[in-house]
Length: 253
Ligand SMILES: [Zn+2]
Image (tube, rainbow, N blue to C red; front, side, top):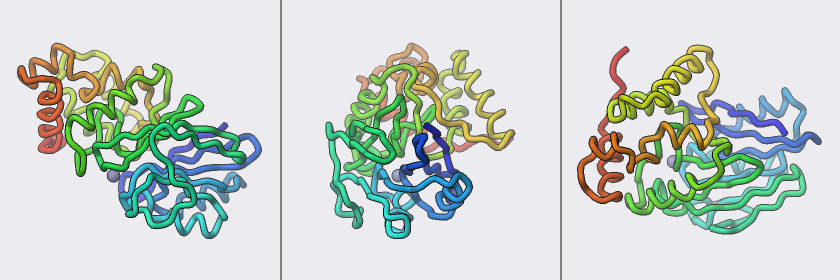
């Protein structure tokens, strides 16, 4: 099994997962060129496309890739995704013949209402729901929905690799450190992310163990976060955290 994060558009990742026989799937192809280049370089065949949510930077190249490679598109039930062969939803299982992989589907409303995640083979493809050290903006869902979605993902095993949709880790670390300054795991993650970006490599996938240790959106019950976010209930603290992240700008270096 090979897993690649293909940089696309401004700061997206298209995930490419292939089996030993050379059959491949991609998750959230917003652009065709990085996928075509990776397939040409490896000789792999694209058979399957998995989509997490309807935003154009995640689905923009799906129809083109499907038409040219004969790939099958799996997508959530949302008419804003016009082209799909298989519609999936919460608790469905995607069983593929080639590549020989299977995934459980988890509904994760919050960033959008029809957003889904795919879990299997120790991998979590979570689109714009969970990021490394962050989470997606609430464009359609409520804070309560997003918190419940993140908690479903956070219940997966420690070693699960978090394959998210964007390279946002350094900004997310800067924001998290402003609220959780004594967190040594977070300081180490920030240093690692700086080194990864300086070397020109992705900061993801992370692991769920990393995220539980560093990600403020999974740590709203930690003493430092409770102190920073006030005495409200969990949903109020989560909503306040998301509001502050929306207003946060990376400090100048
Ligand atoms: Zn999105």
